[in-house]
Length: 307
Image (cartoon, rainbow, N blue to C red; front, side, top):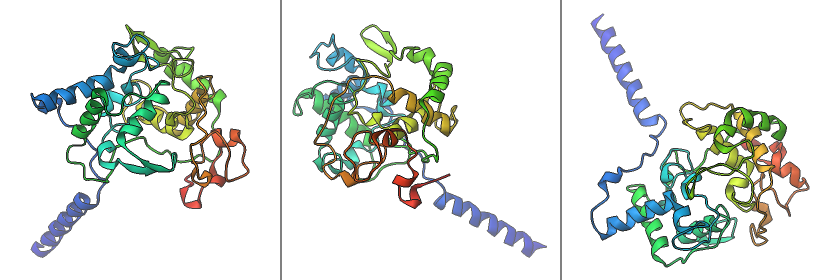
């Protein structure tokens, strides 16, 4: 009896050890802003954070520095000033840039990536890559990275890649979900809600929204972002929408009119284009509509297709 008890205890300890070492990695959490030093370096970090949170006040149509952006804030897409798990956060930004990107076919700096967002997501113009605002935003992202090892992406970084669905995403079905769950914040017309000079809830289409060159215009990016973060109050631990609903809502949003901006230099090697990039040319014979809404299964390696 005593020997049996010892064996049972050892088995339980072994199972606990396995859970500890082989369970899912802990989700990245941002450092506490109270730990930012009271120093010139700390002031730069705080300024970078303010630029991310209140971009429109500095760069929007009524910006205090320039009027080079559409009125959205960086944190309208990078939730909670770029700190929300699977909310398009900045946890991997400092650790993974500079890096080679297929979209440009070149090694890009973090400054280049930030200016891409100004041009595409904010439908504006690049800012001075050596100026104080750029330096402050980079300093903030460097501070957020903390102890993230060079070259690594922590769990919870970026946007979740949802399973590719066997059917095409349906804008008509998505419209019904949008009206029921999204229109309260973003408006039935998709134009968002403003609080003074800033958007409390961003426009999802129309002239003040992101343009067709933005990464979030790809349906898989939009669907993953929606699934873990929307409607307001949703967390990645408790999604409100089903995966199919997230794909359909994304289809409705990307089907709506927005600023069109061509980037003919993108994807110089067309074979590296993501399957849901909605503009040709392509290395396959599928149409732009198929690339925009799916189904994507036959465009993917067999290992990428999930039920």
